Image (cartoon, rainbow, N blue to C red; front, side, top):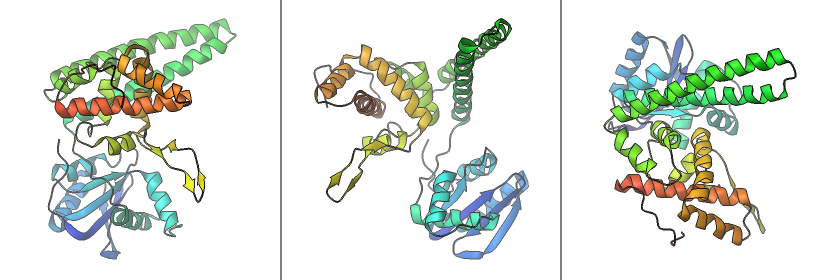
Amino acid sequence: MTPSSTPAADDVFVGIDVSKDVLDLVRLDQPDALLRFPNSPEGVQQIVELMLECKPARIAIESTGKLETPLLMALLQQRLNACHVNPQRVRQFARAVGHNAKTDALDALVLARYAKAVGPRITEEKSENQRELAELVNCRRQLIEGRTAHLHQSRRARSEFAQKQLKAVIAQLDERIEELEQAIGKLIESDEQMRPIDSIIRSFIGAGAVLSATLLAHLSEIGRLDHAPLSALVGVAPFNDDSGKRTGQRHIRGGRPGVRHVLYLCTISAIRCNQQIKAKYKQLLAQGKHKKVAIIACARKVLRVLNAMIRDRQNYRPTPTKIT
């Protein structure tokens, strides 16, 4: 899929605050003119028609528990420059510019100002299969988390009856997880765009079905971004912590935690079985790096290799003697 590409008015920035019943819209060039629409198919269509007339440079919409999905999809289908933004970052921006009050109208205005000042990434339209894959991957992750919680609870439970009930739930979760994994595999296999990328990812020694599905669902930018911005997008790029003469330890932050978690687990596997990544890990330890720091550095390496593989449409070719 390609990013939204509607010719835009460089001086028009729009913020839309989404709630269950109402969509509040503010244009930054008309900050006092609040427009209110019902959060319904009719209201969404009215907003789309309005946006097609003015073609904003950015339309900022917060993530609001999926309530924003119909509007976001409708805007993207018309190649409008909609940005699906992180609400936490928007609130931090609001406090930074002195917007401590909170109303629907103010929230929409803050979103418009955020769109102009920060210039968030324009969201890409996903295919129906990509959207379904994302939901399946998210559902699997939630069931895995639930299974892990029940396993821990069953190990601590002293009551035999409680243990029996927990084991029954765990068995049911195992069945549901297996069904989900089968559905994910069939969906990827049936999609002409995802199937070849899945094959490329899984050719990497240490990568499996879970990493492949996660990247296809939640990192569509892979293969099209340079390595540095892609690492920052995932959240494995270290950021400096220096001030004056002090040189602090660099830390990773932000990014997409779901992708980062799966990549981290894949990297641990690759350190064991992939000679190229194992050599990189040993080299970092020999330089005195902490083990977790070395693993994150190897995760960046894994991501870099996968990014190049998908960009060049080439399966993995091991190079164990070359460490970069």
